[in-house]
Length: 203
Image (cartoon, rainbow, N blue to C red; front, side):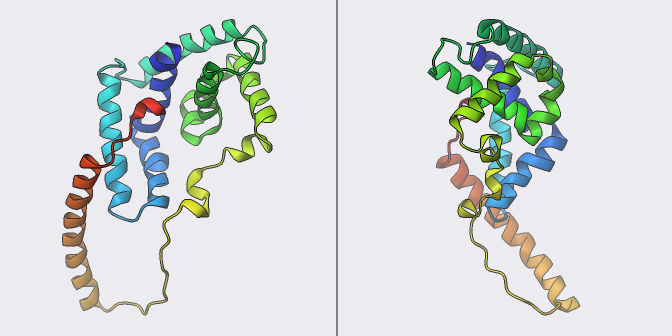
């Protein structure tokens, strides 16, 4: 219950709730993977769905509210751990769920910006994350790098040297790109809404 009611909303708000974090990090991540206009359409749709879920079923409408909720969850989780490596003495599904959110809160750029100070008040949770990272991931936090930095998942883009365009070519390109962007955006939005259904519950 704590994962769905508190940790997941905090993760979702860190990703989608703040305009600056969204533009600087979340949307930029998609820009590294998908070409335009998909790099704008996919995050726009995911953000719209995430904010709708936050304000609806999860009843989180502000960053202050998300922080208040997650602070209570941190306190409860720290009390349940009582210095143990795992909640029930051995790895369980609960550990996997809690760890996935906590390591995001502690290590990701958007997580640190929003949650670093709050999470630091609960050193037991920091130790919990570090112990699992060290024990179950060979290189620890180094493995938790930005997926957008991995060349194997980037869409290949051909790069060719081009001569500087003339004024006439620039004017033509601007008009052409405007209509291509509109047409591409409509097509991509249709595909995203009818084919791609990503659940923010999995964050």
